[in-house]
Length: 187
Image 1 (tube, rainbow, N blue to C red):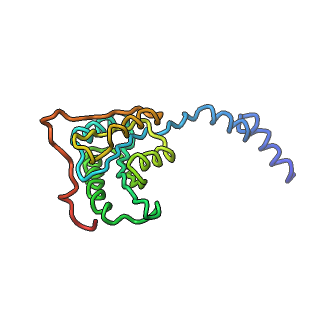
Image 2: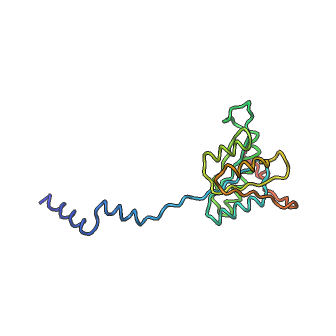
Image 3: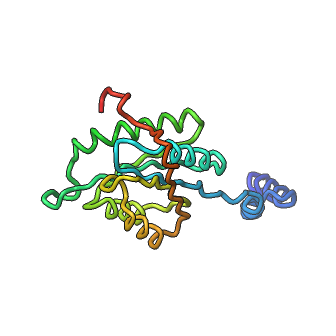
C-alpha cells in the first residue's frame, strides 16, 4: 500500500503532462532568448568633452536602451609599471567621469564607467577594446593637437574595431563642453 500511492501519483502526473523532462523541454521552448545589452563606449582623455559628443552618446543610449560606458584613458610613462597608480591624472579625469555619469543618469541612461591605462592613448584604447565588446564607439574629435586622440589614433580605431565608430567634431563656433571642474569633493 505504501508503494502503490507514490506510483499512482507518478502515473497520474505523467498522464497529465507533469513529467520532469517534459516540463523542462516545454519551458525551454517558451523562454525568450536573452538579448545582450548593447554597449556604447565614449573614450576621453582630457578635462573637457564636447557637449555635442556627450549629447549624441546619451541620445543613442536612450534610443537603443544601451549602457553608456565613458572611459577615461590615462597614459603611464615607460619608467613606471603599467599598473601604477596615477593620482595626478586621476585628479584630472575622475571629475569629468563623474560629471558624465551624473548627466547620463539624469537622462535615465545606465552608466558603467571605466578608467583604462596604457603607454599611449591608443594603447589604452586597444587594451580596453581587447577586454570588452562594444556595439558603438563615439569619439569627440579635438581641434588642438596634443589633447585627445590624434588623427592617426582615430584611423587606427577605424581599422581595428568591430564596433560602429562615430567621430564627432562640433561646428567651429560650438565651444560648449562638459567639465568636471565644478564638482570638487573627494576626488
